[in-house]
Length: 139
Image 1 (cartoon, rainbow, N blue to C red):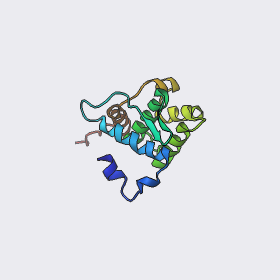
Image 2 (image 1 turned 180 degrees about the horizontal axis):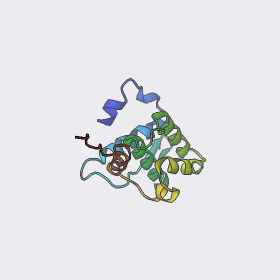
Image 3 (image 1 turned 90 degrees about the vertical axis):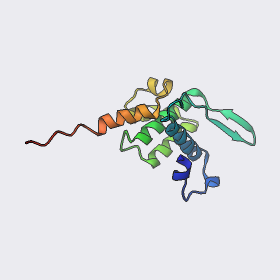
Image 4 (image 1 turned 120 degrees about the horizontal axis):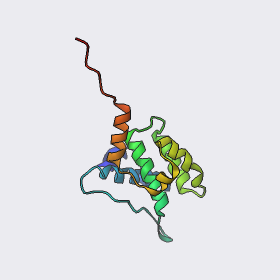
């Protein structure tokens, strides 16, 4: 369902690796809202040279970044900014942005890299932050 709604007007054959990872990770994150779906995903890059599974640390960082983005936890985490972080994380110097991503998500780098947080938990956290109880009107 995520792909059907988010890929409108996009030629999927022209997406680069980091943008494909962005959409795939977001689709997985969204699916974890359903009861019984969860666990840490495995992300693999498949090419003519074969397939290579992404290491678990990067996978957790991408998953947490996706959860923070989808839940709207931080308004600065726009689609463009999230895609830029995905590109950096999948690049050679990925560790350089881990602290930046951790700060945007209100985590430390150890939690960011060792714990995969499901979207429902990100959404609960974002809602607690963004939707404070409304006080009843005075009588």
